[in-house]
Length: 236
Image (cartoon, rainbow, N blue to C red; front, side):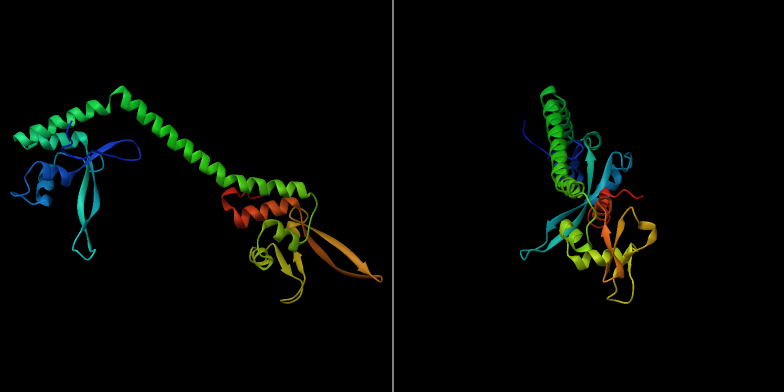
């Protein structure tokens, strides 16, 4: 079967036709402008059901200029109706062409082919998601494998991020503060202890010093999701 008009297929597997191509195929371009032709022929159609507006690019000049033209994506039924309304031999020919296209489109062979293509596209999508999530899942396993609480520097290294960037995130998120001034020691807010942080106290020569802040395995997993994988975050 010769292709009179190109049949397009969208992501949902629905077929549609360009109104401009139908306009050209009906050979009415010499008698009326496209905008006027579509205005008349779309009166019996429903916007969003039988057609939808689309913009198409067309070359404007030899220097690469592009002009956008208004077009409409028609369902095959709508295209058949317009072809029939034309009342011409060309219109009848195009209507019969659409009927034959629908017969072939709905044949068992093509229906099976479309089903397989759809299933394959979904499978590829799932494989892509799995590939994206695998590194995240592997990193989460590291938090469990490393066991105990560790310092901020070690945690940043484990997360594979810059230490200063990690500290800025903790400060801006109000998870920690500096005990005194810009260069003060990092200390966690009490509400985040001991779930996200634990404090390691110590002394030297009988003098106690400011406790060192350590991040728990749960805390490292939480901060990883919070700052670097927000799609996996589980707020507590």
